[in-house]
Amino acid sequence: MSIEPDFDKGGGLVPVIVQDSETNAVLMLAYMNRDSWIKTLETGKATFWSRSRNQLWLKGETSGHVQIVKDILIDCDNDTVLLKVTQVGGAACHTGYASCFYRKLSGDGFETVGERVFDPKEVYK
Amino acid sequence: MSIEPDFDKGGGLVPVIVQDSETNAVLMLAYMNRDSWIKTLETGKATFWSRSRNQLWLKGETSGHVQIVKDILIDCDNDTVLLKVTQVGGAACHTGYASCFYRKLSGDGFETVGERVFDPKEVYK
Image 1: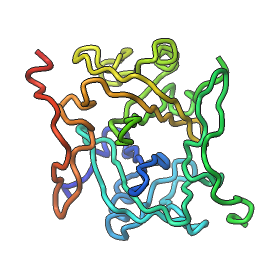
Image 2 (image 1 turned 30 degrees about the horizontal axis):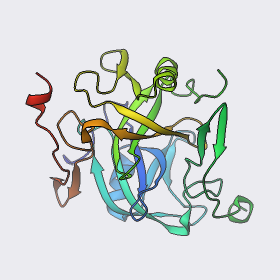
Image 3 (image 1 turned 45 degrees about the vertical axis):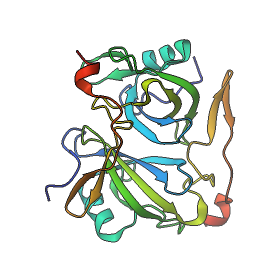
């Protein structure tokens, strides 16, 4: 397959920004290797490479909060992917917030500004 | 400084997503080390670490298209930063497009969907 990001540059992985296709909120950043790229194209569901577990990671596999891919964009250097998705369940973050970026730098600390959509204890049993 | 991303996880660097604070468009992805993080906080202008040139990189230093930082958010894992910025000049990409993500996967290839704001030959002389 010739149409793909440059996986070699980052040792087999490219960073993937996930953006809500309706609200334009940035939901999370994850990584893809070639297998997860192909899986994402085949299934239309965001699939990443988990660097901590060293395995393919279908986002939402446990929680049901999968990400339906609407658009796939690539940057000028071919080394970063932008996925525009519909976030099933309304929350991308395992903490229950809509976005993983739910804390904002404010004075000397980080202030929570995100919206909590679910209780993790209810979702990950 | 205790309030900062976890630079150790990525060998001293964290990925930084840059988003237009008005349009919510994702403009680019770059990397910061601790020096560029501190420089960004001090100056209010997005400053990265150039992995290709191995030096601090004030975004827009050559083109004048600096990024005025409006908000700094951090993700649940403390290993990715989201900068919301005002993009001076209206374009973040060195190719003259508003966003580095100006190509969309379409059928067998990438289709240009972005808007070209300037001619690189005029800006980088």
